[in-house]
Amino acid sequence: GKRMPSKLQHDVGVWDDLMCARRLLLSTLKRKLEEHLNSKHVDPDDRVPLLAGFDAASAQCLILTLESAAGAARMQGNFGAAKGYLQALAPIRKQLGVKSSLASNCSVLQLKVAMDRARTAAGSAQ
Image (cartoon, rainbow, N blue to C red; front, side, top):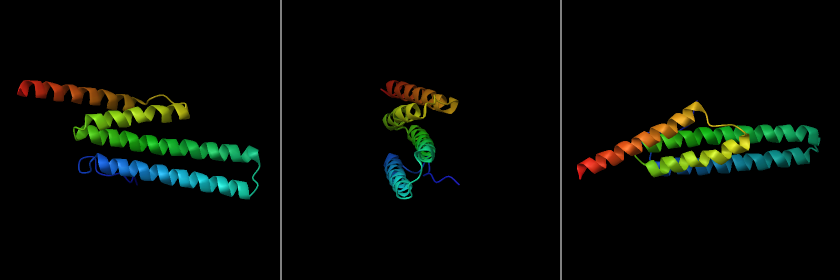
């Protein structure tokens, strides 16, 4: 199953901790994979696809986590954090050579609508 914090009960600090932990874990796993491949004298023709596959899977993991964190921040009204998470997706997608998904584009639109509603509500309360 998916291991994610609650979108409604866990604030941005929990999501940031999760992102840091996942990045550290993925970095450690990649280093160990490289050490193993080097110690076994694996043919470079075999090593390159293995590392590329690991990098792609790592990037997908980070994309999923960032999208979930952005959704959680938006639901909690933390629009700055949501925007930051969404912006962090661009370089990862570029690394993978993939464009934004429909779900990601919808997240951006939802964020813009929620920000507009918050501004409108704040303006009418004054």
